[in-house]
Image (cartoon, rainbow, N blue to C red; front, side):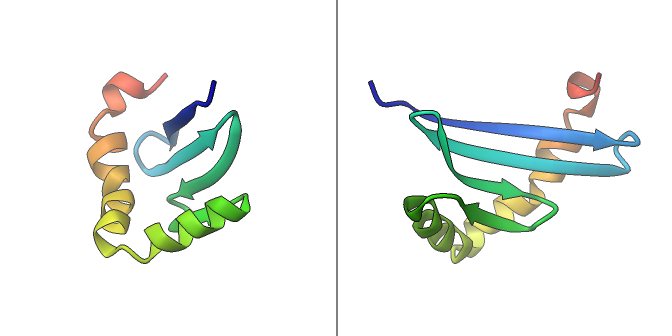
Length: 83
């Protein structure tokens, strides 16, 4: 059985003053690519992940959606998501 999985995480430091958005993509429990808002781009961890990261990093619409996720996903859902 092959499984593709992605997760999105919001990390809140000092309320909504400092927010970090992390999105991880895994295949068969092996993380192959990750977006970190602190880094500002996708990073590949496998040869396939490096190709995916290059492709997605070159797509301005995709990257704009990732960069703005801190606001429209994390800060917007702070009341629900925060501990």
